[in-house]
Amino acid sequence: MRIITALACTGITLSALPAAAQDFTLTSTAIAEGVQLPPAQVFQGFGCEGGNTSPQLAWSGAPEGTKSFALTAHDPDAPTDSGWWHWLVANIPATTTELATGISGSLPEGVIELANDYGATGFGGACPPPGEVHRYIFTVHALGVETLDLPAQASNALASYMINGNSIGQARLTAIYKR
Image (cartoon, rainbow, N blue to C red; front, side, top):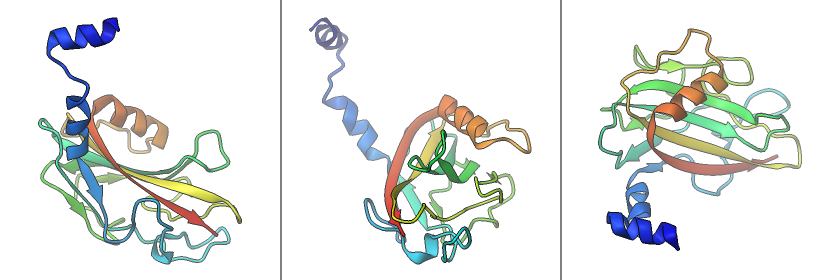
């Protein structure tokens, strides 16, 4: 009760807080919330047969003060202690609001892609163990800095730490995949 009273005294209302977060959205013509990933976004290898193509992603409503974006694609259900990183892109200019289908590997100068957990730089598609349903969380992060100062061979854990430390907003789209 004291917290609610304190918020009321400062002029902050709980109903106003979610509205700002709902303005920043991530959409795709290739993938949909809660829907099975199409073959194009499935890995080619490890027993999976897919196109291993990065999906089209677009975002709008970035928070005021956004100076750049980062994009992550992560499977928290992978049988590891840290999940599985499928894609991490950083230093996307604030003027960018879309990544085209298949852009991984040919991003503009200054935009960086890290190695995914398959060990290759760029997008790595879905490939869960047979019979398991996994979530693939695509997140665009609005950052309050123009660039992240990352070493050339930065791990996804370090990059994620830097992204979260500079994030001023996030928009997510979670697809699933089962083979």
